[in-house]
Length: 242
Image (cartoon, rainbow, N blue to C red):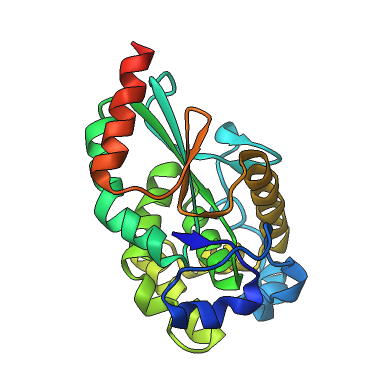
């Protein structure tokens, strides 16, 4: 489990193995962090806005102030799961590598569970990763890029300089099928980033999120779990709904 702390402690946290004491609920002020593509932002604007729609989220599924909920599963599923996770959280990476795929196969794909992923922002690298994941423009691609980001977390999050981290995230985006113009459009979108941060703050406050990964299951908050415990809880919720 990773506790929510301020962004200034990120380097120390990574060295300490990822168990973070609570310092404050919130997210870094976006003014503190340059976007990785900021140097190209004016050039992109002058070159034209033809790629603008490619890197944005589909209007039909947008909600909560313009932010699209990233959801898998049937709308009328018996149980709703909302995960709060950070792309720089090692415990979140472990969950997605060891638990998520089995939950998806055994509960989401069967129509029993509706699963929503919501980003938590500890730091600028997590923000950049979120912009890349959402750059695909649809939910299927979002979850595919998210899997890639978590699978390669130990590589990109420790790539070295900010530029090196951004390049690693761009590489992941390109492997996922995004082109260079799409990626730069997404990584220079300060308005989108500010909207995402405010959306995160609102949701995390309403749901009482204090650590990652956390799960809101039919309105009840739960901390990180292994597959067996998660499956047992879902079985119980499904039985109650029948």
